[in-house]
Image (cartoon, rainbow, N blue to C red; front, side, top):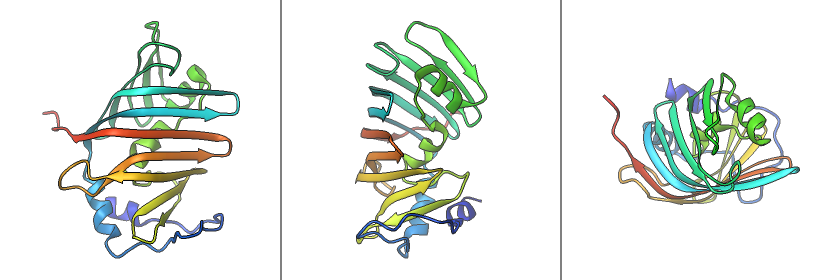
Length: 202
């Protein structure tokens, strides 16, 4: 099923390709994508910045732990005001705890984040984009640079650019170290300083 998902790069109208990029995948892309898709239990740390027409903010990602489809994020600093913000969920469900201890739950994670912060923040898809993979839902286009590395993903109206990658985890392809997601006047930028694989829970 993973293979079919990663191969389903549907033909949809797109903007002209940026100079130096191609939509033709290199011969080893399927192998690399399969390896990245197998990284389902991981943890990272870094920084997050969101900019949109009516609001901007930034945060330290103290922890983003992903266990299959379940995620747990601990954010601090300017995100939702000073203090600690916690997000726990999976596709189709999110619990969000604000610095003052108020907790909110929703079956629409993106709507909850927008209601609580005013930000458009596609968290369910970001769990895929952050690994350099398209999300399983929706058409997408992949763009590669002249070295054969994945440079950008176009999906759900977002242009996700992989600005830098590093060989964080032995045995896996290089993972994004800096990622920028753009949609109109909205921008999400992430800098990842640490990736590690974590053991599956029994």
